[in-house]
Image (cartoon, rainbow, N blue to C red):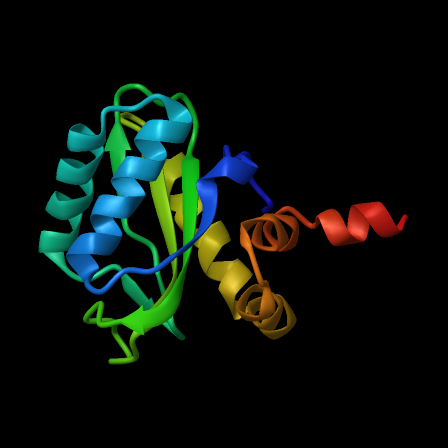
Length: 153
């Protein structure tokens, strides 16, 4: 990623979920567990944002996001779904890759830059394919953080 986004291997997971509501709940639980946030607060923030309009970005991905007082930089959890779910995405395609982003409460521009960075990541066809091909959370994390390139050097 090209900006300072907090992401750790434990926050990148494969998931078997059946609905958008389950995806949002799993993201909230993951963000709470990994980063020490309150799951109910995160879920409320994600649901409030989602009520404004779907965060289904298109191309099989979604970026549910919110702000939270207890994070000091954009913080990310990533779920790769074992089968896509309807997310009411802009292109009407079901979603199989979900980036849950929580940014600091007063981080207007930083939050927008983080969303843009995730969006740019998904326009890279090779990286998108690598994410789709990743067999587990560890491989997903490596693709997201360019570990493959660093380790090859």
